[in-house]
Length: 286
Image (cartoon, rainbow, N blue to C red; front, side, top):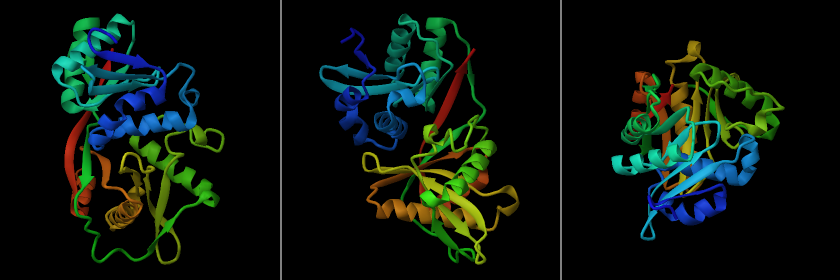
């Protein structure tokens, strides 16, 4: 145990044994910690790069106060931390010689860590233009009436369709990822279940995905409608279907991220019953 309380490990099972109860006690703010720990445990750390994944737990007097993970060479992702806790982690990682391209966390934590990282390393932080809001579902309120058509859950036989839609989504949000049959299994898109909204003639017009149930929670992730088909209620209909499926699968909490620069999508999620949980930020380091 370090004097500052941070315990680092490359063993995801050890990380979850130490911090699992803490993360599950507030699954919404810890959605990224839970999701990526399960991905690493399920696929193996080697699936995400040559360097070992690093997980950290802030443990003081036997009580967990915070966590982080890093899949090098990516940045560090943090659970909610106080400024003092963020500073202790920045000092610890700087002393270990980590070079971080960015920090990702709730807005307050990310800002506090970025300021501390600059003090400890001299690296200049820059707030990434894309700002996200994390929503949690209250009472689901599907659109009435829904648009003409029906939903269809995609299966293994629909892999080409899934890869096409995920490629369109990734391109639209600026994700630099190759999506094809050879790379698919290593992407973050491979462990989701997808639902299409189709018009009465069977034309697919919108897609939504959801992550597996983790810690009593499901994250709706990937909601996409081609630009020329927006404004017709397709995204609302398919998101409602996926949210309903998440509840039916046993989720106590259903969460999703929305880009704050897109007022239409934020308003849509709120109409469906999603309520703001916290704002998210990424600070990049020069």
